[in-house]
Length: 380
Ligand code: UDP
Image 1: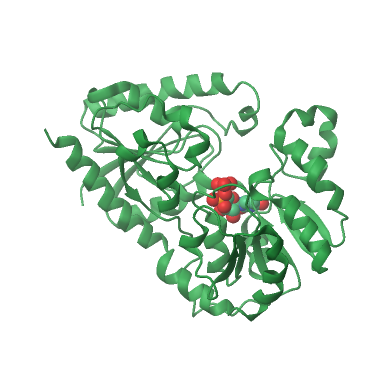
Image 2: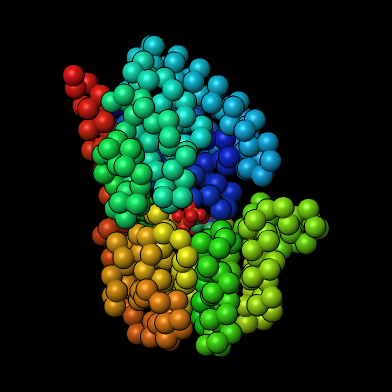
């Protein structure tokens, strides 16, 4: 297949990400499969990205994640100007067929502003859009900018203007969702795990109270705002409270973190993350937001850990209640479901993941969408 895609990963983190990094993980999973299918990939990212690609362009040497806190607009402005230059040059030489963008404040803003002069563009929506309508107010790139969701429920909640530009949804995947039958069955420990950003939407406070109620150990893994390790947060002092996720953690979660039954271990990565997830008795998602795509959900299944969750956002699309997890609309019922989750079969979780959430399935679907976007951009 002769197709060249400019993949815009944005300025925040390297690809693959050093630990936490939802969007960067998606790109790191997707790109190798696309290349296997013959797609040429130009990666627009930061200099520290190590993902093998055919060509790369970068505006910053390192990820600007820490700047998500303050000079946000400055970083976006620099990244937008750089991307606009790169896209204009490559497009004028016919060196790219399509831009696959993942970063609304940088990529989508830039590409939509180019209007009909820009290349065909597919923007993947990664957020709960009902909460961010303003971000997409300027989506008027003629027929050249299209969007896709990461779940049907995310698209259904999106503002109408976005739905009109949609070409469908593609579920997230994980490289862990392969060889289910060849890997040894994971040794299960006692702990429950919540893997993800510490944030009110992810509900770590609900999980922590639940753990004390049912008496099961709970591990909370993930960053609190920009702080990846408990020691970093402790060292930051009062200034850290400017971040809403830090305030949430200190006020609502930390009072239940006793270092014994409930622990916050900071961001986990690589084998440590996989072992923590594979050995959990269940993975908990006491969500208060409409989870748009849920990478950690599919990772959990792929490692043979059933999911116990509030049935919000994409959870009912990803989890088959009674087979790969247990879902409830009522937060108070989560405790009972945790107790019942021991009856679910870890191997069944892995088998389902290896059918539905492999990188190959995701890449194949994106190639179909790329063709559709190019076709639509040519239509009179
Ligand atoms: N993650 C990680 N270490 C952590 C916390 C999260 O590697 O300590 C990863 C997690 O495995 C997943 C991603 O970060 O791949 C989070 O993506 P998800 O879609 O679950 O949540 P988001 O943060 O994008 O809402």
